[in-house]
Image 1 (tube, rainbow, N blue to C red):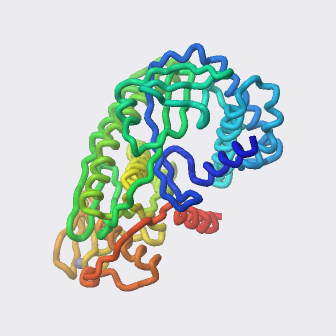
Image 2 (cartoon, protein in one colour):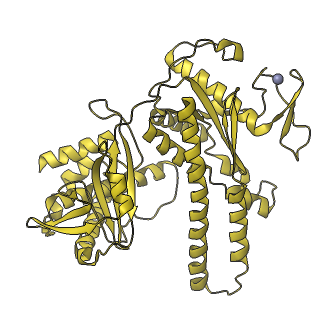
Image 3 (cartoon, rainbow, N blue to C red):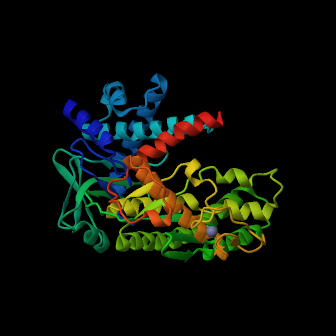
Length: 430
Ligand SMILES: [Zn+2]
């Protein structure tokens, strides 16, 4: 049993979470993805799922009582307490692991100053990274005494898992009859010679560097949001139960439609980066919502439109897709992001926006008009390059003329950087 705990802890250290990747103990780079299948017949497993849910809730309770949120401490604390459940021991460990994840997320949210209720698993579920098999397109879920429950997988899932370089790691079953299978691979790192800056806007996503720019249109996402808002507004019945159902239905529809749109764009962005062998540099716009709060002398409609902008979702999608392909991601700091759409990417002088209604900027030195979004993407690319050179210890001016010697960009770890920046930012906001 101890070996199970140690292995689970080791997996946590490896970063064994959905869409995450880090170095594991052997310094391998691992990328994780998952594939989902709905409409499976999981009714016979419901008692097992319900017991799993109760074990998760028990573990959360123990963790909260002793103020513990790491996998190792929680398993030492809660494993004996779960002895009265008639389940296989690896399900117990996976329940503890799931609870540890929930507690760690809670801790993070508390550190950010969010108000939280006590976490609680409401839906029956079953997660395991042990004892299961995928044989001939069938997922075999262990149910005890050497018995398995067979779940036939559909053609899409079979096709995804048929790739021999993939390693199937875990499964998740939920009460709404869906199965998620988590798989992993070690991506081959792309040796990049360029850095593309990416500027996320309400109506478009602009990516590129000083030599080449691509713009992806996202105005359809704005239209979808506006349509949804007008549909919801047209319901007049003042009943909280009906209103809740309707809002949830149309909110889900909006989310699905916009995410689908963003998936197309993020796929194209990663493909573009892969073809041109360029790393992607992201700006830090974490606190942008503060600009559009009540009391900032802006209209309700304007604030609503800008707050519906899903800038974090597209970043999340690009990040995990890039990691899967082995494309490096650079996360710039707030300081590096400052004034990216106010300085000329060619001469570095301040550029002015003559007319507030258009997004055109005029540079007095270069005597030319430039688009605000393109300027931002070019500046981000330049700053990404200087960030990279700084991190490699050879600092120099990153103007256009200084780029003869192009460095290789390998394994840029954005995770560590975001952590460092967060601690800095906490200090400044307090
Ligand atoms: Zn200029």
